Length: 327
Image (cartoon, rainbow, N blue to C red; front, side):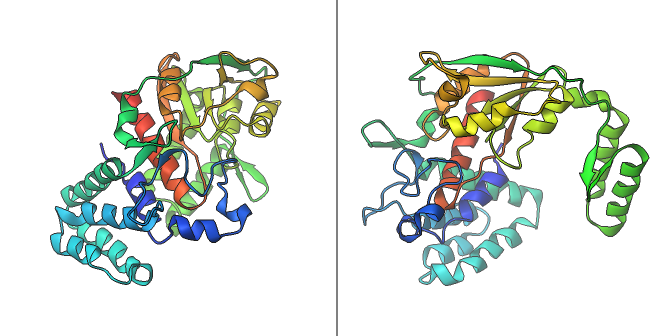
């Protein structure tokens, strides 16, 4: 099934190309995920254009046109012939939304065509910097084996859903009252309120028995590793092989009651933080094979973030990983 989130991630970056990124200050051009480079010179990337650069603008505009083509051919031609893309791209984004509102089929078509265009247009750079189709990652063999190190918590699993809010920890009836207030104010969709209410009624669900939750971007500040482990869940962590990230992840929470699964280099030696991790941009097959060998039903969550075009690359790599796991 097509991923509207990935399609929107890709489309959101057309106005910023590699040349612009290279002109930015080093601390802003570099990916938030430590070590991912704004020059897009490794792994999943944008193709080299006629001018020799990896332009997010040209690739993104092509994806927008492809996404529109079946539902709105006039809109697709308008995208292709736009001469002032950097100042007018918003009108084409608006058109993407407008033509998708008519029917669920139209929206699904736009998402599916946009995602197919991502796979058709984006590339992966091999060890010699030769471009090959990004879709080859769906069947490419692993180049190294990742082994699992389990880090088990010794805390007691949380027995109720608690929501931190304005210095308080809301649970039980107080949480119900707040959810209903948000519903009345339009802060939350009614379906979201109902879903959280269900969890309040069934705190045993918090352990996610039988599931292994895959957290892509384990070191992300807004990631869910902390709550998941406090609830007693089994969590497979994926992030870059950088000691600073893993020291923070492994430091953990004294209240952890779950099990953290850490991917490590099977040939590595040393402290866990120095041999942990894998780069999703370059190691989709390796990460997929590691995850496929874990016990339990996999629930994959993408919490990755990076600046500029690298965010699109990570989103595309995460989607390819999910597709490979589902195949």
